[in-house]
Image (cartoon, rainbow, N blue to C red; front, side, top):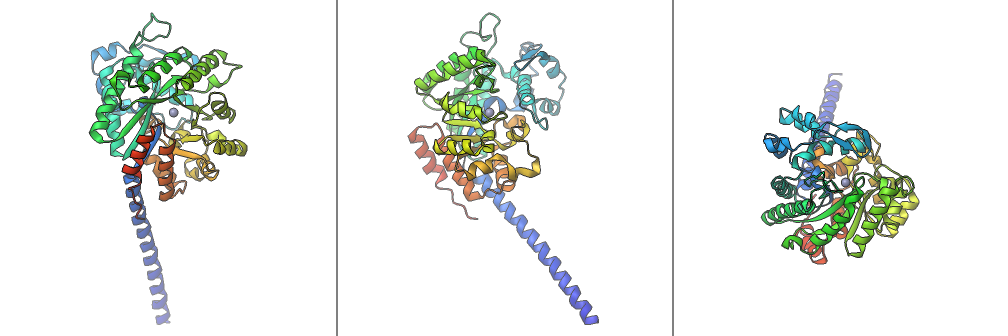
Length: 421
Ligand SMILES: [Zn+2]
C-alpha cells in the first residue's frame, strides 16, 4: 500500500514537473518569437503623420505663448456641425503629459468619428508650425528605424496641417499647404539619411473638404517630380481620408464631384491612388474605389471580407489591401472582441489570396506600433512568422516605390532576413 502511495506521488510529481517544463518551454518559445518579430525587417504602407505625432513634443509646445495664442477657440466638425469642439478650453485643462495623452488617445470608443474628433483636438498645436512639423517628421523616421521598418509610405493632408486664413475660400493661407510638404520632406530626408531607411509620402485629400482636393493633387505632382529640390522622400501617390461620404454621389454630390475629378486628374498625371474604402461601410465603396476612382490599393476594406464575390474580384484584379488591426477594432470597422482576433477579416483576405499589408494607421492615437500590430496577427490570428515575412515582401511589391527602390529594399533587408525558428 505504502509502495502504491509513493508510486502515485511520484507520478503526480512527474506530471506537474512536465506541465511546468512545458509551460517554461512555451514561454521561452514565445519570447524567442517576439524577438524575431521585433527584429523582422518591416514594410508599412498606411500610417498617418498626424496620427503618429510625438505627444511629448506637442505637450511641450503648449508651454509656448505663441502656440497657445494661435489655438482656435472652437472647431466645427464636418460630420456634426451642431456640436462644435472647444479645442482651446480642452487643451488648457491639460496640466500634465498624462492628461494630454488621455485627450489625444482614442481607445475603447469603437467609432470612426470619435477617432477623427481626437485629431481635431491636437492637430491645431502643429498647424502652421513648420519647425515642429519638421521635427515630428524626423522623429517619425527615428521611430520607424527603431522598429526595423525599412520602407514606409507616410500620409497626411498638407491643408489640414497648414496655417489657416479667414481670407481665402479654402480657409488655408496662400502657399501654406506647400510649406507643410516642404517642411515634412525636409524632416523625413534628415531622418532617412541618418537611419538608412526609405520613406515616401502620400498626400491625402480630406473627405469633408473638397475645396482642398485640386491643390492636394497639384502638390502631390510637384513633390513627385523633385519638388523643393528633393529627390528622396518624394510623394508617390494620393488618397482621400477622413470618411467615405464622397463615394455617395446621390446624397453628397458636393463631395463626390470634386473628389472624383481630382483623383481622375491625379491618375492622368501618373500618380498612384490608394483610397480609404470599406472601413466601416459596405463593399460597394470598395468597388467604387477600384472601378470608378481607379485605385490600385484600398485602405482597410474590411467589408470586402464579408462578400466572397468582392473578395474574389479584388484578388483577380490584384488589388492590395492595407489592413490595420488595432485601428479596425478601435474605429468599429471590425466589430469583433479582443479575444476574437481569429475571426478578423484579415484571415478571409489571406485565405482568398489577396495581397495585404499590416499597418498601424494612427499609432499615437491608438497607443500602437507596427511591431504591436504584427504581434496581434501572429499571436491572436495565428499567422506564422514565415507568413508574416511573405506579407512584408508582398507589401514591398505593392508599394508605390520605384522599381529600383523595391529591388534595393528587398535585397538589402528582406531577403537577408533568415527565420531561425
Ligand atoms: Zn488611414
